[in-house]
Amino acid sequence: MLAGAGQMGGALLEAWLDVGIDHRCLTVLEPRPSGPLVERLDRAGIVLNPLAGTRPSPDVLVLAVKPQMLERAAPDLLPYAQPGTLLISVLAGKTIADLRRALPDVGSIARAMPNTPAAIRRGITGVAVDAAVNENQKAAIQFLLAAVGEVEWLADENLIDAVTAVSGSGPAYVFYLTECLAKAGEAVGLEAAVAMRLARATVEGAGGLMAARPGDTSEMLRRNVTSPGGTTAAALDVLMMDTGGLPMLISAAVAAAHRRAAELSG
Ligand SMILES: NC(=O)C1=CN([C@@H]2O[C@H](COP(=O)(O)OP(=O)(O)OC[C@H]3O[C@@H](n4cnc5c(N)ncnc54)[C@H](OP(=O)(O)O)[C@@H]3O)[C@@H](O)[C@H]2O)C=CC1
Ligand SMILES: O=C(O)[C@@H]1CCC=N1
Image (cartoon, rainbow, N blue to C red):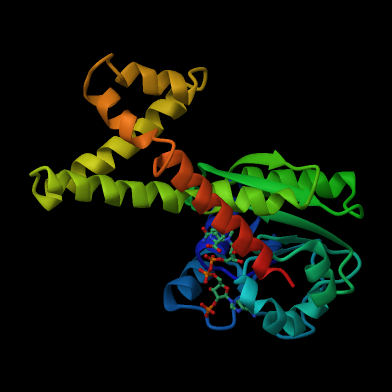
């Protein structure tokens, strides 16, 4: 059962259908479903918003509502979060203790932090579990999350906030880098549309190159671009500055995301 079929829940659902999970095993809870969602679920034969009491509590309940919606969503979820149910939450910030408070009867809890490349099954998900999660449930978690990409198991739930700040939010940093690169291209004379095409293709190509060369470190790939005394070296001198350079900016950004995750708990 999936509660919340938005960006992230929707990506998970599509991936589960792709890996062959039987549509009869899937149920979606979404109080205000869009027309396209209703049509998609109908086409896949997936039950949407079953009448209260007509569905048993599921083996697995995947929770993908906004963190701020947890308390409001909880009363409707209580019948489905029972002792036999494993709850997998992708909510940023909400701790296992928060989830347990909201859904006190649920058997076991996993916190997972995927990212939007899940939509093309190229995501990476960090996951941590509470002590009640058994081996069968761990296998189910691995299967459900591997459907959208790599899975990184974490020994400590506290690390989920760090994963959120790095890979959960990370795609947005890369998209923003693309926007900044395009704007900078305009500043050195390119037409806006050309600058954006160059910036996009550069980020796509660089990502593709990393994916195609898993044995090469990102540092090696960077060095391959950097001719001594050349243009890239001149740019990297700026990006690598101790004060105001990229390390400082990225560290501050990741620290801000990490702090925000902590603020979302409770
Ligand atoms: N987007 C991302 O990159 C990532 C998001 N996450 C986490 O995923 C969660 C969802 O985020 P995202 O998919 O971006 O958000 P969305 O707003 O796209 O999805 C949330 C969905 O939940 C629905 N919803 C609201 N209330 C309920 C309810 N009571 N029961 C069932 N469904 C409900 C919303 O409907 P409506 O719009 O009508 O309110 C919406 O369709 C968040 O907790 C976020 O922290 C984790 C990793 C990455
Ligand atoms: O911005 C957010 O809070 C969510 C969590 C990670 C990505 N999006």
